[in-house]
View 1 (cartoon, rainbow over the protein chains, first blue to last red):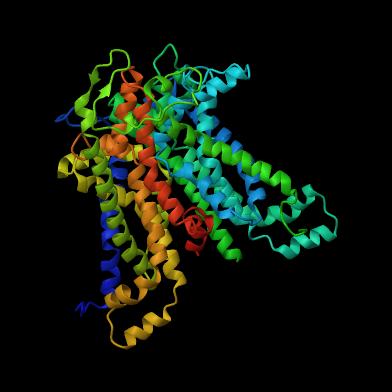
View 2 (view 1 turned 60 degrees about the vertical axis):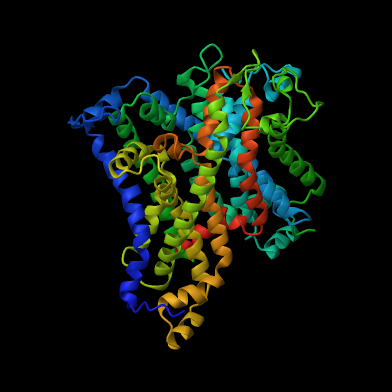
Length: 299
Length: 295
Protein backbone atom coordinates (compact mmCIF):
# COMPACT_ATOMS: atom_id res chain seq x y z
CA UNK A 1 0.00 0.00 0.00
CA UNK A 2 1.80 3.07 -1.20
CA UNK A 3 0.32 6.18 0.30
CA UNK A 4 1.18 8.96 -2.07
CA UNK A 5 1.33 11.85 0.30
CA UNK A 6 3.96 13.90 -1.38
CA UNK A 7 3.63 16.81 0.97
CA UNK A 8 6.75 18.53 2.18
CA UNK A 9 7.51 18.23 5.87
CA UNK A 10 7.18 21.94 6.45
CA UNK A 11 3.56 21.79 5.29
CA UNK A 12 2.90 18.43 6.86
CA UNK A 13 3.83 19.57 10.35
CA UNK A 14 1.08 22.18 10.24
CA UNK A 15 -1.38 19.76 8.68
CA UNK A 16 -0.74 17.35 11.56
CA UNK A 17 -1.58 19.86 14.26
CA UNK A 18 -4.65 21.14 12.42
CA UNK A 19 -7.32 18.77 13.87
CA UNK A 20 -6.31 19.59 17.44
CA UNK A 21 -6.17 23.30 16.68
CA UNK A 22 -9.67 23.26 15.19
CA UNK A 23 -11.12 21.35 18.14
CA UNK A 24 -9.47 23.65 20.66
CA UNK A 25 -10.53 26.79 18.83
CA UNK A 26 -14.16 25.86 18.33
CA UNK A 27 -14.86 24.14 21.64
CA UNK A 28 -12.44 25.78 24.06
CA UNK A 29 -11.09 29.14 22.87
CA UNK A 30 -14.29 30.57 21.40
CA UNK A 31 -16.31 29.58 24.51
CA UNK A 32 -13.66 31.29 26.67
CA UNK A 33 -13.98 34.49 24.64
CA UNK A 34 -17.79 34.27 24.56
CA UNK A 35 -17.89 33.82 28.34
CA UNK A 36 -15.59 36.76 28.89
CA UNK A 37 -17.49 38.94 26.40
CA UNK A 38 -20.99 38.17 27.68
CA UNK A 39 -19.95 39.13 31.22
CA UNK A 40 -20.25 42.74 30.03
CA UNK A 41 -23.82 42.23 28.80
CA UNK A 42 -27.21 41.64 30.33
CA UNK A 43 -28.24 38.31 28.85
CA UNK A 44 -29.91 34.98 29.53
CA UNK A 45 -29.70 31.86 27.35
CA UNK A 46 -33.27 31.09 28.27
CA UNK A 47 -34.67 34.14 26.49
CA UNK A 48 -34.23 33.25 22.86
CA UNK A 49 -34.32 36.05 20.35
CA UNK A 50 -33.51 38.74 22.89
CA UNK A 51 -30.39 40.66 22.00
CA UNK A 52 -27.84 41.05 24.78
CA UNK A 53 -27.75 44.55 26.32
CA UNK A 54 -24.34 46.07 26.86
CA UNK A 55 -23.99 47.08 30.52
CA UNK A 56 -20.23 47.55 30.93
CA UNK A 57 -18.94 46.62 34.38
CA UNK A 58 -22.43 46.51 35.89
CA UNK A 59 -22.33 42.72 36.30
CA UNK A 60 -19.01 42.88 38.12
CA UNK A 61 -20.32 45.60 40.37
CA UNK A 62 -23.43 43.55 41.13
CA UNK A 63 -21.35 40.50 41.89
CA UNK A 64 -19.00 42.34 44.23
CA UNK A 65 -21.89 43.88 46.14
CA UNK A 66 -23.90 40.64 46.31
CA UNK A 67 -24.18 39.92 50.04
CA UNK A 68 -23.54 36.16 49.76
CA UNK A 69 -20.73 36.04 47.24
CA UNK A 70 -18.00 36.43 49.88
CA UNK A 71 -19.46 33.56 51.86
CA UNK A 72 -19.11 31.43 48.73
CA UNK A 73 -15.52 32.57 48.26
CA UNK A 74 -14.83 31.75 51.91
CA UNK A 75 -16.50 28.34 51.66
CA UNK A 76 -14.49 27.52 48.54
CA UNK A 77 -11.25 28.48 50.27
CA UNK A 78 -12.22 26.65 53.46
CA UNK A 79 -13.10 23.51 51.50
CA UNK A 80 -9.91 23.62 49.42
CA UNK A 81 -7.66 24.10 52.44
CA UNK A 82 -9.45 21.42 54.48
CA UNK A 83 -9.48 18.69 51.85
CA UNK A 84 -5.95 19.37 50.64
CA UNK A 85 -4.58 19.23 54.23
CA UNK A 86 -6.40 16.01 55.05
CA UNK A 87 -5.42 14.40 51.77
CA UNK A 88 -1.79 15.41 52.26
CA UNK A 89 -1.55 13.99 55.77
CA UNK A 90 -3.21 10.71 54.76
CA UNK A 91 -1.54 10.56 51.35
CA UNK A 92 1.93 11.16 52.76
CA UNK A 93 1.53 8.48 55.45
CA UNK A 94 0.25 6.00 52.88
CA UNK A 95 3.03 6.88 50.45
CA UNK A 96 5.70 6.31 53.12
CA UNK A 97 4.16 2.95 53.88
CA UNK A 98 3.88 2.00 50.21
CA UNK A 99 7.30 3.25 49.15
CA UNK A 100 8.82 -0.19 49.60
CA UNK A 101 7.84 -2.86 47.08
CA UNK A 102 6.26 -6.00 48.47
CA UNK A 103 4.10 -8.86 47.22
CA UNK A 104 0.83 -7.42 45.99
CA UNK A 105 2.23 -3.89 45.88
CA UNK A 106 0.82 -3.13 42.44
CA UNK A 107 -2.54 -4.64 43.32
CA UNK A 108 -2.82 -2.37 46.36
CA UNK A 109 -1.98 0.68 44.22
CA UNK A 110 -4.56 -0.32 41.61
CA UNK A 111 -7.29 -0.79 44.22
CA UNK A 112 -6.43 2.63 45.66
CA UNK A 113 -6.91 4.19 42.21
CA UNK A 114 -10.46 2.84 41.78
CA UNK A 115 -12.33 5.73 43.51
CA UNK A 116 -10.78 8.19 41.06
CA UNK A 117 -12.17 6.27 38.11
CA UNK A 118 -15.84 6.61 39.09
CA UNK A 119 -17.80 9.57 37.71
CA UNK A 120 -17.84 12.21 40.47
CA UNK A 121 -21.60 12.50 40.06
CA UNK A 122 -22.05 8.76 40.70
CA UNK A 123 -19.69 8.87 43.71
CA UNK A 124 -21.68 11.77 45.12
CA UNK A 125 -24.98 9.91 44.69
CA UNK A 126 -23.65 6.68 46.21
CA UNK A 127 -22.38 8.43 49.31
CA UNK A 128 -25.46 10.58 49.62
CA UNK A 129 -27.88 7.69 49.35
CA UNK A 130 -26.29 4.61 50.89
CA UNK A 131 -23.71 6.10 53.26
CA UNK A 132 -25.02 9.40 54.64
CA UNK A 133 -28.82 9.22 54.34
CA UNK A 134 -30.12 9.78 57.89
CA UNK A 135 -32.56 6.85 57.91
CA UNK A 136 -30.69 4.16 55.94
CA UNK A 137 -27.09 5.43 55.64
CA UNK A 138 -24.37 3.10 56.86
CA UNK A 139 -22.19 5.84 58.34
CA UNK A 140 -25.13 7.22 60.26
CA UNK A 141 -25.82 3.76 61.63
CA UNK A 142 -22.18 3.18 62.56
CA UNK A 143 -21.83 6.52 64.35
CA UNK A 144 -25.20 5.94 66.01
CA UNK A 145 -23.90 2.67 67.48
CA UNK A 146 -20.79 4.50 68.69
CA UNK A 147 -23.08 7.17 70.19
CA UNK A 148 -21.44 9.95 68.16
CA UNK A 149 -23.98 12.61 67.17
CA UNK A 150 -23.80 13.14 63.43
CA UNK A 151 -26.14 14.93 61.05
CA UNK A 152 -24.58 14.27 57.66
CA UNK A 153 -27.29 16.00 55.66
CA UNK A 154 -27.74 18.98 57.96
CA UNK A 155 -25.25 20.70 60.19
CA UNK A 156 -22.42 18.26 59.45
CA UNK A 157 -22.90 18.54 55.68
CA UNK A 158 -19.55 20.22 55.20
CA UNK A 159 -17.80 17.36 56.99
CA UNK A 160 -19.63 14.80 54.84
CA UNK A 161 -18.55 16.54 51.65
CA UNK A 162 -14.96 16.64 52.88
CA UNK A 163 -15.12 12.91 53.62
CA UNK A 164 -16.36 12.10 50.10
CA UNK A 165 -13.60 14.21 48.57
CA UNK A 166 -10.91 12.66 50.76
CA UNK A 167 -12.13 9.17 49.87
CA UNK A 168 -11.79 9.94 46.19
CA UNK A 169 -8.58 11.95 46.03
CA UNK A 170 -6.26 10.82 48.85
CA UNK A 171 -4.89 8.07 46.55
CA UNK A 172 -3.95 10.70 43.99
CA UNK A 173 -1.74 12.52 46.48
CA UNK A 174 -0.36 9.16 47.56
CA UNK A 175 0.57 8.15 44.00
CA UNK A 176 2.33 11.43 43.33
CA UNK A 177 4.37 11.14 46.52
CA UNK A 178 5.18 7.46 45.88
CA UNK A 179 6.73 8.70 42.64
CA UNK A 180 8.76 11.24 44.60
CA UNK A 181 9.92 8.78 47.23
CA UNK A 182 11.21 6.39 44.60
CA UNK A 183 13.77 9.05 43.71
CA UNK A 184 15.41 8.91 47.17
CA UNK A 185 18.71 7.02 46.62
CA UNK A 186 19.19 3.97 48.83
CA UNK A 187 22.77 4.97 49.57
CA UNK A 188 21.65 8.25 51.13
CA UNK A 189 19.21 6.41 53.38
CA UNK A 190 21.96 4.02 54.46
CA UNK A 191 24.29 6.90 55.19
CA UNK A 192 21.61 8.51 57.36
CA UNK A 193 21.27 5.26 59.30
CA UNK A 194 24.99 4.97 59.87
CA UNK A 195 24.99 8.54 61.19
CA UNK A 196 22.23 7.49 63.59
CA UNK A 197 19.60 9.91 62.37
CA UNK A 198 16.23 9.72 64.17
CA UNK A 199 13.02 9.24 62.19
CA UNK A 200 12.22 12.95 62.11
CA UNK A 201 15.73 13.93 61.00
CA UNK A 202 15.59 11.19 58.39
CA UNK A 203 12.32 12.51 57.05
CA UNK A 204 13.15 16.21 57.28
CA UNK A 205 16.71 16.19 55.90
CA UNK A 206 16.94 13.04 53.78
CA UNK A 207 13.54 12.12 52.36
CA UNK A 208 11.83 15.50 52.18
CA UNK A 209 14.31 17.27 49.88
CA UNK A 210 13.90 14.55 47.26
CA UNK A 211 10.12 14.38 47.55
CA UNK A 212 9.60 18.16 47.61
CA UNK A 213 8.99 18.76 43.87
CA UNK A 214 6.40 15.99 43.81
CA UNK A 215 4.70 17.31 46.92
CA UNK A 216 4.49 20.71 45.29
CA UNK A 217 3.01 19.33 42.08
CA UNK A 218 0.47 17.26 44.00
CA UNK A 219 -0.44 20.42 45.92
CA UNK A 220 -1.08 22.47 42.77
CA UNK A 221 -3.07 19.68 41.12
CA UNK A 222 -5.23 19.09 44.16
CA UNK A 223 -5.86 22.80 44.72
CA UNK A 224 -6.99 23.17 41.10
CA UNK A 225 -9.26 20.13 41.48
CA UNK A 226 -10.68 21.27 44.80
CA UNK A 227 -11.56 24.63 43.22
CA UNK A 228 -13.63 22.88 40.57
CA UNK A 229 -15.52 20.37 42.73
CA UNK A 230 -19.25 20.80 42.39
CA UNK A 231 -21.06 17.48 41.88
CA UNK A 232 -21.05 16.42 45.51
CA UNK A 233 -21.96 19.91 46.69
CA UNK A 234 -24.89 20.06 44.30
CA UNK A 235 -26.12 16.70 45.57
CA UNK A 236 -26.07 17.96 49.16
CA UNK A 237 -27.66 21.30 48.24
CA UNK A 238 -30.50 19.32 46.64
CA UNK A 239 -31.53 17.67 49.91
CA UNK A 240 -34.96 19.15 50.68
CA UNK A 241 -35.15 21.70 53.55
CA UNK A 242 -36.11 19.97 56.81
CA UNK A 243 -33.20 17.51 56.44
CA UNK A 244 -30.88 19.51 54.27
CA UNK A 245 -27.98 21.79 55.13
CA UNK A 246 -27.97 25.55 55.34
CA UNK A 247 -27.05 26.33 51.71
CA UNK A 248 -24.79 29.19 52.71
CA UNK A 249 -22.62 26.84 54.74
CA UNK A 250 -21.67 24.58 51.86
CA UNK A 251 -22.36 26.46 48.63
CA UNK A 252 -19.12 27.17 46.76
CA UNK A 253 -18.17 28.95 43.58
CA UNK A 254 -18.46 26.04 41.10
CA UNK A 255 -21.79 24.89 42.53
CA UNK A 256 -22.93 28.52 42.46
CA UNK A 257 -21.99 28.66 38.77
CA UNK A 258 -24.11 25.57 38.26
CA UNK A 259 -27.10 27.13 40.02
CA UNK A 260 -26.79 30.34 38.02
CA UNK A 261 -26.43 28.53 34.70
CA UNK A 262 -28.88 25.65 35.09
CA UNK A 263 -31.42 26.63 37.72
CA UNK A 264 -31.66 30.42 37.55
CA UNK A 265 -30.63 30.90 33.90
CA UNK A 266 -28.77 34.05 34.91
CA UNK A 267 -26.20 33.76 32.16
CA UNK A 268 -24.51 37.13 32.57
CA UNK A 269 -24.14 36.70 36.36
CA UNK A 270 -22.75 33.24 35.69
CA UNK A 271 -20.18 34.41 33.13
CA UNK A 272 -19.05 37.18 35.48
CA UNK A 273 -18.30 34.77 38.31
CA UNK A 274 -16.84 32.32 35.79
CA UNK A 275 -14.39 34.94 34.54
CA UNK A 276 -13.15 35.50 38.10
CA UNK A 277 -12.75 31.75 38.56
CA UNK A 278 -10.85 31.38 35.30
CA UNK A 279 -8.45 34.09 36.45
CA UNK A 280 -7.87 32.27 39.76
CA UNK A 281 -7.19 29.01 37.87
CA UNK A 282 -4.82 30.74 35.47
CA UNK A 283 -2.81 32.07 38.40
CA UNK A 284 -2.50 28.51 39.70
CA UNK A 285 -1.44 27.15 36.31
CA UNK A 286 1.04 29.98 35.91
CA UNK A 287 2.59 29.22 39.31
CA UNK A 288 2.87 25.61 38.28
CA UNK A 289 4.51 26.37 34.93
CA UNK A 290 6.98 28.80 36.45
CA UNK A 291 7.95 26.14 38.91
CA UNK A 292 8.47 23.61 36.12
CA UNK A 293 10.64 25.99 34.18
CA UNK A 294 12.71 26.67 37.27
CA UNK A 295 13.20 22.94 37.84
CA UNK A 296 14.16 22.55 34.20
CA UNK A 297 16.82 25.25 34.44
CA UNK A 298 18.34 23.69 37.53
CA UNK A 299 18.64 20.25 35.97
CA UNK B 1 16.21 -3.72 55.77
CA UNK B 2 18.02 -0.68 56.95
CA UNK B 3 17.79 1.28 53.75
CA UNK B 4 14.00 1.33 53.40
CA UNK B 5 12.01 4.49 53.96
CA UNK B 6 9.45 2.96 56.29
CA UNK B 7 10.82 0.50 58.81
CA UNK B 8 8.02 -0.78 61.04
CA UNK B 9 6.88 -3.72 58.95
CA UNK B 10 3.86 -4.77 60.99
CA UNK B 11 2.58 -1.25 61.32
CA UNK B 12 2.86 -0.98 57.55
CA UNK B 13 0.39 -3.78 56.94
CA UNK B 14 -1.99 -2.38 59.54
CA UNK B 15 -2.05 0.97 57.75
CA UNK B 16 -2.42 -0.59 54.31
CA UNK B 17 -5.19 -2.87 55.52
CA UNK B 18 -6.98 0.07 57.12
CA UNK B 19 -6.93 2.07 53.89
CA UNK B 20 -8.02 -0.87 51.76
CA UNK B 21 -11.06 -1.27 54.01
CA UNK B 22 -11.86 2.44 53.63
CA UNK B 23 -11.62 2.21 49.85
CA UNK B 24 -13.36 -1.10 49.39
CA UNK B 25 -16.11 -0.84 51.97
CA UNK B 26 -18.31 1.74 50.17
CA UNK B 27 -17.78 -0.14 46.92
CA UNK B 28 -18.80 -3.49 48.38
CA UNK B 29 -21.69 -1.94 50.25
CA UNK B 30 -23.09 -0.49 47.03
CA UNK B 31 -22.60 -3.88 45.34
CA UNK B 32 -24.51 -5.55 48.19
CA UNK B 33 -27.27 -2.95 48.00
CA UNK B 34 -27.64 -3.62 44.30
CA UNK B 35 -28.59 -7.27 44.90
CA UNK B 36 -30.78 -6.71 47.96
CA UNK B 37 -34.54 -7.09 47.93
CA UNK B 38 -36.35 -3.76 48.16
CA UNK B 39 -37.25 -4.02 51.88
CA UNK B 40 -33.63 -4.70 52.81
CA UNK B 41 -32.39 -1.58 50.98
CA UNK B 42 -34.77 0.54 53.06
CA UNK B 43 -33.96 -1.04 56.42
CA UNK B 44 -32.72 1.38 59.09
CA UNK B 45 -30.25 -1.18 60.45
CA UNK B 46 -27.80 -2.58 57.91
CA UNK B 47 -28.89 -5.96 56.57
CA UNK B 48 -26.09 -8.41 55.85
CA UNK B 49 -28.12 -11.60 55.47
CA UNK B 50 -30.66 -11.68 52.68
CA UNK B 51 -31.62 -13.68 49.62
CA UNK B 52 -29.78 -12.07 46.73
CA UNK B 53 -31.98 -10.92 43.88
CA UNK B 54 -31.28 -9.49 40.47
CA UNK B 55 -34.50 -7.48 40.34
CA UNK B 56 -32.58 -4.20 40.50
CA UNK B 57 -30.76 -5.13 37.31
CA UNK B 58 -33.97 -5.76 35.40
CA UNK B 59 -34.05 -2.28 33.99
CA UNK B 60 -36.24 -3.31 31.09
CA UNK B 61 -38.92 -4.31 33.59
CA UNK B 62 -41.04 -1.74 35.33
CA UNK B 63 -39.85 -0.17 38.53
CA UNK B 64 -42.35 -0.65 41.32
CA UNK B 65 -43.41 2.03 43.73
CA UNK B 66 -42.42 0.56 47.15
CA UNK B 67 -45.57 1.89 48.84
CA UNK B 68 -48.30 0.97 46.40
CA UNK B 69 -46.51 -1.76 44.45
CA UNK B 70 -47.69 -0.10 41.25
CA UNK B 71 -45.33 0.30 38.28
CA UNK B 72 -43.90 3.80 37.92
CA UNK B 73 -42.26 5.62 35.04
CA UNK B 74 -42.18 2.45 32.99
CA UNK B 75 -41.30 4.44 29.90
CA UNK B 76 -38.04 5.76 31.31
CA UNK B 77 -36.88 2.46 32.73
CA UNK B 78 -37.34 0.77 29.38
CA UNK B 79 -35.06 3.33 27.74
CA UNK B 80 -32.18 2.11 29.86
CA UNK B 81 -30.48 0.16 27.02
CA UNK B 82 -30.55 3.22 24.78
CA UNK B 83 -28.83 5.42 27.36
CA UNK B 84 -26.20 2.77 27.99
CA UNK B 85 -25.72 2.38 24.23
CA UNK B 86 -25.31 6.14 23.84
CA UNK B 87 -22.65 6.17 26.55
CA UNK B 88 -20.68 3.37 24.91
CA UNK B 89 -20.98 4.78 21.39
CA UNK B 90 -20.08 8.34 22.36
CA UNK B 91 -17.18 7.24 24.57
CA UNK B 92 -15.72 5.12 21.76
CA UNK B 93 -16.17 7.86 19.15
CA UNK B 94 -14.58 10.52 21.33
CA UNK B 95 -11.70 8.20 22.24
CA UNK B 96 -11.02 7.67 18.54
CA UNK B 97 -11.14 11.40 17.75
CA UNK B 98 -8.94 12.29 20.74
CA UNK B 99 -6.37 9.66 19.80
CA UNK B 100 -6.25 10.61 16.11
CA UNK B 101 -6.00 14.34 16.75
CA UNK B 102 -3.75 13.92 19.79
CA UNK B 103 -1.35 11.57 18.05
CA UNK B 104 -0.79 13.75 14.97
CA UNK B 105 -0.46 16.81 17.18
CA UNK B 106 2.00 15.18 19.57
CA UNK B 107 3.97 13.73 16.65
CA UNK B 108 4.29 17.10 14.96
CA UNK B 109 5.39 18.77 18.19
CA UNK B 110 7.81 16.00 18.99
CA UNK B 111 9.48 15.75 15.57
CA UNK B 112 9.34 19.24 14.10
CA UNK B 113 9.96 22.71 15.42
CA UNK B 114 6.59 24.38 15.81
CA UNK B 115 6.46 28.07 16.60
CA UNK B 116 4.21 28.53 19.61
CA UNK B 117 4.23 24.83 20.47
CA UNK B 118 5.16 25.22 24.13
CA UNK B 119 2.65 28.03 24.86
CA UNK B 120 0.01 25.87 23.21
CA UNK B 121 0.84 22.97 25.54
CA UNK B 122 0.67 25.36 28.46
CA UNK B 123 -2.69 26.64 27.27
CA UNK B 124 -4.01 23.07 27.11
CA UNK B 125 -3.11 22.71 30.75
CA UNK B 126 -5.58 25.48 31.63
CA UNK B 127 -8.39 23.38 30.15
CA UNK B 128 -7.69 20.97 32.97
CA UNK B 129 -7.69 23.60 35.69
CA UNK B 130 -10.99 25.31 34.90
CA UNK B 131 -14.32 23.80 35.87
CA UNK B 132 -16.18 22.74 32.70
CA UNK B 133 -19.32 24.52 33.93
CA UNK B 134 -17.63 27.72 32.76
CA UNK B 135 -17.94 26.56 29.15
CA UNK B 136 -21.50 25.29 29.21
CA UNK B 137 -23.60 28.40 28.35
CA UNK B 138 -21.22 29.27 25.51
CA UNK B 139 -21.21 25.70 24.19
CA UNK B 140 -24.98 25.57 24.49
CA UNK B 141 -25.26 28.62 22.22
CA UNK B 142 -22.67 27.30 19.76
CA UNK B 143 -24.35 23.90 19.64
CA UNK B 144 -27.73 25.48 18.96
CA UNK B 145 -26.27 27.58 16.15
CA UNK B 146 -24.40 24.83 14.32
CA UNK B 147 -27.01 22.15 14.91
CA UNK B 148 -24.97 19.90 17.19
CA UNK B 149 -27.39 20.10 20.13
CA UNK B 150 -28.43 16.65 21.37
CA UNK B 151 -26.35 14.81 18.77
CA UNK B 152 -23.89 11.97 19.31
CA UNK B 153 -21.19 13.57 17.21
CA UNK B 154 -21.48 16.90 19.04
CA UNK B 155 -20.98 15.31 22.44
CA UNK B 156 -18.11 13.17 21.10
CA UNK B 157 -16.30 16.25 19.78
CA UNK B 158 -16.61 17.98 23.16
CA UNK B 159 -15.30 14.98 25.07
CA UNK B 160 -12.45 14.59 22.58
CA UNK B 161 -11.49 18.24 23.08
CA UNK B 162 -11.42 17.89 26.85
CA UNK B 163 -9.50 14.60 26.66
CA UNK B 164 -6.88 16.13 24.35
CA UNK B 165 -4.59 17.69 26.99
CA UNK B 166 -4.08 14.30 28.64
CA UNK B 167 -3.72 12.30 25.40
CA UNK B 168 -1.25 14.83 23.99
CA UNK B 169 0.92 14.79 27.15
CA UNK B 170 0.98 11.02 27.35
CA UNK B 171 1.65 10.45 23.64
CA UNK B 172 4.28 13.15 23.35
CA UNK B 173 6.05 11.65 26.32
CA UNK B 174 6.15 8.26 24.59
CA UNK B 175 7.16 9.76 21.23
CA UNK B 176 10.02 11.71 22.81
CA UNK B 177 11.28 8.49 24.37
CA UNK B 178 11.30 6.66 21.01
CA UNK B 179 14.58 7.31 19.14
CA UNK B 180 14.41 9.12 15.81
CA UNK B 181 17.18 7.04 14.22
CA UNK B 182 15.00 4.26 12.82
CA UNK B 183 12.57 6.82 11.46
CA UNK B 184 15.39 8.60 9.72
CA UNK B 185 16.73 5.35 8.31
CA UNK B 186 13.32 4.65 6.77
CA UNK B 187 13.21 8.13 5.30
CA UNK B 188 16.58 7.64 3.67
CA UNK B 189 15.07 4.56 2.04
CA UNK B 190 12.46 6.82 0.51
CA UNK B 191 9.46 6.47 2.83
CA UNK B 192 7.26 9.53 3.33
CA UNK B 193 6.78 11.05 6.77
CA UNK B 194 3.25 9.71 6.80
CA UNK B 195 4.45 6.18 6.00
CA UNK B 196 7.02 6.42 8.75
CA UNK B 197 4.45 7.52 11.31
CA UNK B 198 2.05 4.76 10.34
CA UNK B 199 4.43 1.81 9.94
CA UNK B 200 7.42 2.50 12.14
CA UNK B 201 6.46 4.88 14.92
CA UNK B 202 2.94 3.71 15.65
CA UNK B 203 3.80 0.08 16.49
CA UNK B 204 6.49 1.35 18.87
CA UNK B 205 4.15 3.42 21.01
CA UNK B 206 1.30 0.91 21.33
CA UNK B 207 1.44 1.10 25.12
CA UNK B 208 1.20 4.89 25.07
CA UNK B 209 -1.81 4.68 22.80
CA UNK B 210 -3.50 2.18 25.10
CA UNK B 211 -2.93 4.32 28.19
CA UNK B 212 -4.08 7.48 26.42
CA UNK B 213 -7.15 5.63 25.13
CA UNK B 214 -8.16 4.55 28.61
CA UNK B 215 -7.89 8.08 29.97
CA UNK B 216 -9.75 9.55 26.99
CA UNK B 217 -12.48 6.93 27.44
CA UNK B 218 -12.80 7.85 31.11
CA UNK B 219 -13.32 11.54 30.28
CA UNK B 220 -16.37 10.71 28.17
CA UNK B 221 -17.65 7.87 30.32
CA UNK B 222 -17.55 9.92 33.54
CA UNK B 223 -18.84 13.24 32.29
CA UNK B 224 -22.02 14.67 33.70
CA UNK B 225 -22.07 18.40 33.01
CA UNK B 226 -21.97 18.23 29.21
CA UNK B 227 -24.61 15.56 28.84
CA UNK B 228 -26.76 17.59 31.21
CA UNK B 229 -26.38 20.83 29.26
CA UNK B 230 -25.94 19.73 25.65
CA UNK B 231 -28.35 16.79 25.31
CA UNK B 232 -32.06 16.20 25.85
CA UNK B 233 -33.09 12.63 25.07
CA UNK B 234 -31.52 11.56 21.78
CA UNK B 235 -27.84 11.58 22.79
CA UNK B 236 -28.16 11.66 26.58
CA UNK B 237 -25.76 9.31 28.35
CA UNK B 238 -25.93 6.86 31.21
CA UNK B 239 -24.88 9.33 33.93
CA UNK B 240 -27.75 11.57 32.84
CA UNK B 241 -30.19 8.72 33.50
CA UNK B 242 -28.53 7.99 36.85
CA UNK B 243 -29.16 11.58 37.81
CA UNK B 244 -32.79 11.20 36.79
CA UNK B 245 -33.07 8.14 39.04
CA UNK B 246 -31.60 10.25 41.82
CA UNK B 247 -34.37 12.81 41.29
CA UNK B 248 -36.99 10.06 41.53
CA UNK B 249 -35.34 8.85 44.71
CA UNK B 250 -35.44 12.31 46.21
CA UNK B 251 -39.17 12.66 45.71
CA UNK B 252 -39.57 9.22 47.24
CA UNK B 253 -40.92 7.16 44.35
CA UNK B 254 -37.77 5.07 43.94
CA UNK B 255 -35.73 2.87 46.28
CA UNK B 256 -31.91 2.91 46.43
CA UNK B 257 -31.70 -0.48 44.69
CA UNK B 258 -31.86 0.61 41.02
CA UNK B 259 -29.45 3.48 41.67
CA UNK B 260 -26.99 1.02 43.22
CA UNK B 261 -27.20 -1.42 40.32
CA UNK B 262 -26.78 1.47 37.90
CA UNK B 263 -23.63 2.65 39.69
CA UNK B 264 -22.20 -0.86 39.56
CA UNK B 265 -22.80 -1.12 35.81
CA UNK B 266 -21.18 2.28 35.40
CA UNK B 267 -18.05 1.21 37.32
CA UNK B 268 -17.45 -2.09 35.51
CA UNK B 269 -15.65 -0.84 32.34
CA UNK B 270 -13.37 1.58 34.22
CA UNK B 271 -12.41 -1.06 36.76
CA UNK B 272 -11.67 -3.64 34.06
CA UNK B 273 -9.45 -1.11 32.28
CA UNK B 274 -7.69 -0.26 35.56
CA UNK B 275 -6.69 -3.88 36.09
CA UNK B 276 -5.76 -4.41 32.43
CA UNK B 277 -3.35 -1.49 32.32
CA UNK B 278 -2.32 -1.54 35.98
CA UNK B 279 1.36 -1.68 34.99
CA UNK B 280 1.01 1.66 33.21
CA UNK B 281 -1.72 3.24 35.32
CA UNK B 282 0.84 5.33 37.15
CA UNK B 283 1.90 6.98 33.90
CA UNK B 284 -1.38 8.81 33.60
CA UNK B 285 -1.43 9.99 37.18
CA UNK B 286 2.21 10.61 37.97
CA UNK B 287 3.71 14.04 37.92
CA UNK B 288 6.70 12.68 36.05
CA UNK B 289 4.79 12.67 32.78
CA UNK B 290 4.03 16.32 32.86
CA UNK B 291 7.35 17.33 34.34
CA UNK B 292 9.26 15.67 31.56
CA UNK B 293 6.87 17.17 29.07
CA UNK B 294 7.83 20.73 29.80
CA UNK B 295 11.54 20.21 29.30
